[in-house]
Length: 191
Length: 283
Image (cartoon, rainbow over all chains, first blue to last red; front, side, top):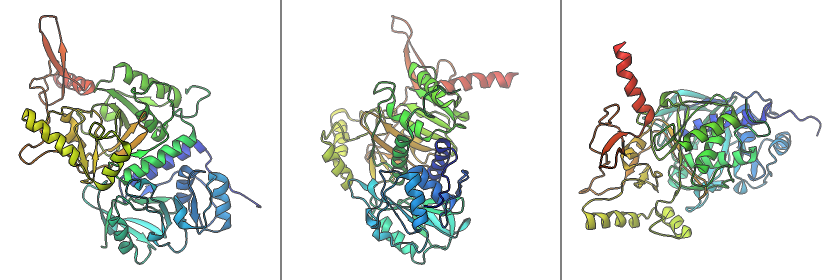
């Protein structure tokens, strides 16, 4: 290890603010939230994904990632999360490159659906107002979310994930300092 | 200034992370109870340990906290919880519903409709709606997994068969997003309709029972009933003796030892606002 950039400047309040952004994103699926904490995670990790992991992951949450050794080292140091070689064993999965198959992640059980994993998916950009039509809990009428660089077959894979409800995985879409969430309860329709 | 020697908002960071993860999954699975490692808090079980842990985990320095106990801002439980968070988090508190960003409540929902910028945190004594019907947790977990809620329907039916109506005035069971049967905590059945499609996020914390659950904003919440016995929220047929409201939930007060009764709003802030409104209009 040569150089390790710092985590949150204020571990308590930055974690709280980041969590509230994630909570707001999860409560209102498709609404884009901004992470205000200023951190400089190692590439290719973006600010939003880093902030989500710093505020949620720890030694209790096995983590899978495809972001390379530097990011793994950074997260191991700042979160203390055990890094898993198998994505199916992870509570948090971080995908910076090609998105993994949603079906590969742990979806929990009917009695313990909360054990379903959270996928943190880095995408090229998030734009509100057009694109996917989202409906479901947290959405009064309809939210629109345009995800730049979303995996090609994502909506079909999402429909399969949603059919498992209450089992399933939840997705945090991250781009730069923007974050939007897709809880398993949300329905996605192509525009 | 906050009390020295305590982390911001009392809980340690590892505990907050654990509770925060539980809250996020609770929001993703509306109405499902998530087990969590409830900590010992500096107040006894039954006084809001679950609600306090949820509040402590979401609270930030810019939040304004309101705490109500049966609708009242000035009861012991509400005052001490507000003072607790003033001491350990240094945050601002309020008694005005519209000014609060987080409202922790014991057994009431404020009369004033909540907004998208607010979070309602309920203190929950018993999170399991099937508790009195099936004592085994292993069994109720399975019933929730199968969405098998026949027991509760039979329970309500037995009320109708014996008494002619559903005799449940509080803790009236609800279906959340037509999937999970949920205990709304012992709020009066009168408040149940307010949960339906509420703009604010609703979080529920049960400290002794170690469960967290949630209702996201704009989520359907239906009180269980039957076609020929529709759900009816119960309200005392009186007007508030102080502000004259005929729509708010009322508390009954015994005023003397000769059978004297008075009814006043249970929501003290709502009542106060209504008392001040005519004055402001007159000035």
